Length: 291
Ligand code: HSE
Image (tube, rainbow, N blue to C red; front, side):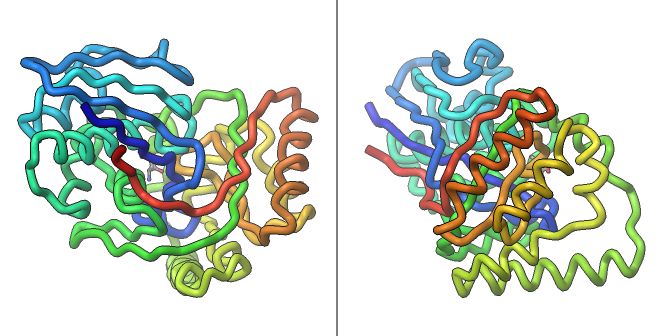
């Protein structure tokens, strides 16, 4: 019997659509795994009533199949599904790391990323590594078809999750199919600034690099109050604000001393639109831990 804590994550960070991701210190899923003859799943925690326990429809079922590692898997959700905080990826990451250890499969953390992504594909219809990579490896990750590059960055963050549901499928349908060259030039500059900021633990440079004029504006329409919350967070000292993953969570980078004020400002801004929200004062953290 093993217990794995796998962190929630934030993908994209504005300029790194489908590539960048960070592990969050909190919240996290806690998953208990016990060897069994077949895969069975038991769900508890945030939004667990909406997640199927059928192994064919749950992210962890595909992971167990890929590792040929049947188990009884109890998942205590720390973050609700369809939040933009890599909820399904956290469960898939925990299952991949835990089953690899339980069955002594010997895969490295990096090798487990595409295995966990198979679980992601069950719910999103497409395999993305940008959430599973940071949940497994921790820190800031750059996931491409050549593999994953990881940086142990330390940046304070605020993640504000409104009581709105945005499905990843819907959020992907509004992504523009083309971008202008000037937008491409700007995106390359911002992504490079963000990456440098992660290496330097510099919230100013990271925030600056979160700016995106291609995907984020299209998705913002799906989040009631996004512009107001973004402006309020920037006025309270956030160095950058964007949509976390496919949304609806709005994520802000900041200096440590501004974090509390930004968190309450973001909550208030959603409140003024009549939208309930919860906020996580967090930072970039480590990857999945086995107990
Ligand atoms: N990069 C993905 C997206 C994250 O924004 O659609 C969700 O899987």
